[in-house]
Length: 401
Image (cartoon, rainbow, N blue to C red):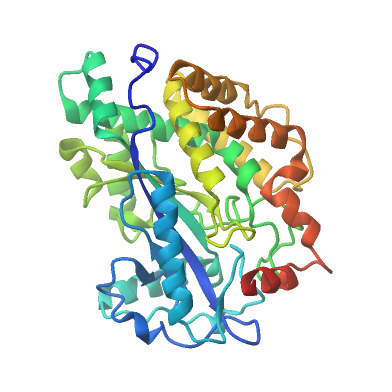
């Protein structure tokens, strides 16, 4: 259908939202024990600045933006407000992995809602509090209304909600299938400080995107093969107590836009939330403009690609591949079974078909360069900052800068 679209169709039309988590750090370079900044008022009602799991873990949430530039500008403004409102001796930790930290350093967010507080206590008991101190970025994405409508008119589908569900489910499936490429390019949780993990993994691409990251127990199996199966599996996991609530399903992509999963069947999926992004310590807002735009093109390429056959098996294999890449040293090349060619071909095809400007060709060229030389990836650069098996000094420098 994308190939049938007129070249002047609004292919780049979309809405974006960014959520960034970060730990507040005190003058001694330890996790701050001060409460959520008072100047920001009530976090229960603040639309853009909230607390995540723990009291020092601040969460910045942009409003819906109609371009990646606008989303990043919002993120910059919110970051600025947070910096001005924090205690003057504090700064935001620029890495996804925390500095040296113990369970005692992690004070659960003192929220007004007792349900939310108890939910966090439950998470701490189930996963351990240390895991909750990892921070990341969530990239929220909705295809533009005109673009979606044009695709619907080209389809044989008569029900718009069913069409949208098919569209977003395909995007989610292909994202999970090719997520390893983003782990390779943008993984940046390369090192756990002493005492954080029970086993040593050394310097890798992305602890957060590996089996050591924030993942559900191994017995939680949620299928993406169809929306009906996805809904049934999530409801079953909650019913059996494997998950305490639907929102405890920590897939690297989340279907969004309804209160419960079952509502998607009647109301439709509105947008997707991609949760794989580690904080970029070289960028003041933790994600660069180039990353936002490359990922946008990557998502469009996922739609250009064919539907997956045998979804469950394909995604099981892709998950294993992603874990292998996440736990590889940042300077190693991709394994032979990780073939980025289909994605690169699709990205180039979109640029050509829709006559996108040279900027997008440059983005693809940067991806190709990083595929040739792993040292150009985010984790490739971070690996060179390790001193005596630690990234604390680097984190302190970048955070204060």
